[in-house]
Image (cartoon, rainbow, N blue to C red):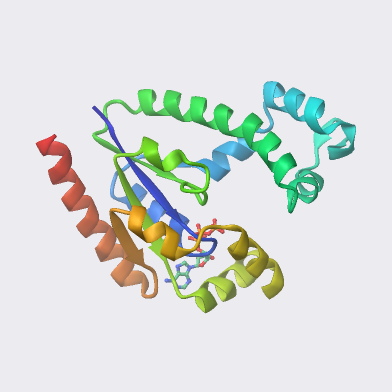
Length: 198
Ligand code: ATP
């Protein structure tokens, strides 16, 4: 049976970078945020969003993700409502994706909020990517063209590494790109052995 590796870490830690290493090593990768973005365009999800949040988060029948983010950010009740619409849809889509990849012994599911969503219980192993806070801030500012304050807000809204580490099977420290690559290969070797043993 296909084993699922959960890959997580705070904003700007380098999850997608590690996910791409796994991909280059032949492991199918599901990037939850990317898939969620696509799923949010499905008519089923759009209808539920309209029902819950009204027309104000739409611009000419198109979902205005920025406005929706403004509505839910800092309002935990509204965030719960949005998550209750989007998370089950992503979960269902991921289940189908795993079945489509049944021929692969290992697959990776990458998500920023693996622990926060409670999803972490669904995985066979969890890898957390970490990097010094200052590097994360600089990398995200550069990548997204956002301010330091905006990055800090997002960091503070997520779990800390101290919360993530005890629930992780492996930790990848992302400072030097080459070391990250070899660490990814090393973990993959271990997991292939574990998969063969199971
Ligand atoms: P997010 O949670 O925002 O999706 P992420 O954890 O997936 O972030 P990445 O997108 O992989 O993080 O990395 C953040 C940025 O930092 C990217 O622009 C990436 O190219 C860059 N980056 C990643 N690792 C390193 C590194 N070791 N040295 C320099 N830059 C890096």
